[in-house]
Image 1 (cartoon, rainbow, N blue to C red):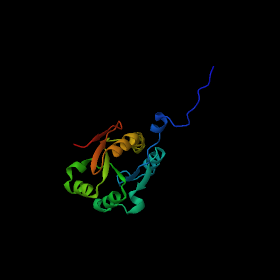
Image 2 (tube, one colour):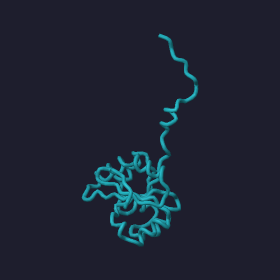
Image 3 (tube, helix red, strand yellow):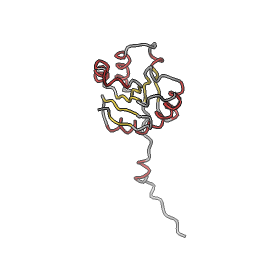
Image 4 (cartoon, rainbow, N blue to C red):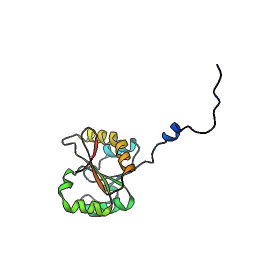
Length: 147
C-alpha cells in the first residue's frame, strides 16, 4: 500500500484545534472558595480570588475596578445584581465581563463542577463579545445573556 507524502504544512484542522488562551477569572466573595478555585484551575482558567487582593466585605466598586482594569472575567453568585442599579453601574463603568451563577440551592461541590463545565462556553462568549456585559450560568451550566 503506498504511503501518503506529507506536505510539511499544518492542515486547516490542526490550526483550528489550538487551545484558546486561558481566561483569568475573578471569584467574588460569594464564590471565593478552595473547591471552586481548584475546579476552575483544573478546567484551564487562571483564578484570582477576592481574598487574595482584598479583605472580605470590600465594597463592589473597589474590586470591580481592579477586575476591569486587569481584564479579568468576574464570576459571582449575586443573582440579584440585575436589580441593584449601583452595582450594575459599577460593573459597567469598570468594563467588566461578568457571569452570574443562578443555580439556586446547589452545594459548593456542584457549583464548582457546573462552573468548571461552563468554562468553554464562558471562553466562547468572551472571545466573541466585548465588555461590559452580564451573563447567567444556570444549574445545568448553560450560559445566556442577562435580559
